[in-house]
Amino acid sequence: GESVGLHLPTLSVQEGDNSIINCAYSNSASDYFIWYKQESGKGPQFIIDIRSNMDKRQGQRVTVLLNKTVKHLSLQIAATQPGDSAVYFCAEKAAGNKLTFGGGTRVLVKP
Amino acid sequence: GAVVSQHPSWVICKSGTSVKIECRSLDFQATTMFWYRQFPKQSLMLMATSNEGSKATYEQGVEKDKFLINHASLTLSTLTVTSAHPEDSSFYICSAVSGGAIGELFFGEGSRLTVL
Image (cartoon, rainbow over all chains, first blue to last red; front, side, top):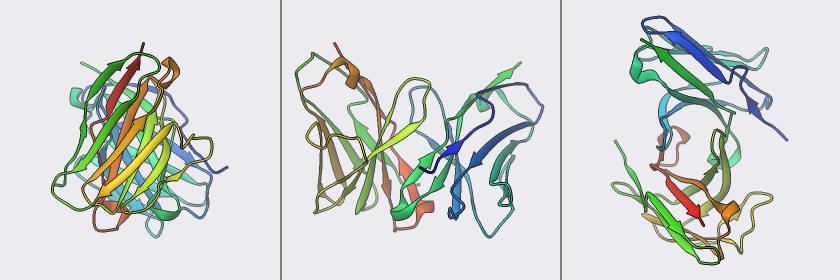
């Protein structure tokens, strides 16, 4: 079946540096993508989204890039802070508002 | 922003008993809610789509008789894990759709079930 996957399971980054989290998706019909942050023992928290008619979208300290040619999605976090330590998931929209989640990347921010 | 509440946040039960988890949309009406299951260090896996006033739609491989879902009102969906076994121990997360747009999808804080 269709799936969304990530390249790196764990990313260690120095505080203040930029973080880049990658995600590959396989369903070329997906038209909407979301990045979520999940802290331990909590539900996913919406970070940023992007539709397939865009290739870049910026938020506060975060940027999502979409490359439909290679079915690749990335999340960039600028000036990573200790509070950014969490697991990050990409998700793609399937039919009927259902989301398919990627495997997740743990971001560890070193002081 | 919209808030989705789950209760209980954690529960411990004995094998063979049933456990009910509630998912409430606190400040909006949700005709559709989703139930996910998450094992440690793994991603969220969709279990079922809960539709207000109708039967839930289960994903392939999810036992509908074991995971009973009821969406009796526009603000409440419940997931009942029947005859729980240790392998049912997991983090159960619900989400609710507000306004019908996928961008307005809100997640609950999750409910951790431990079956002894």
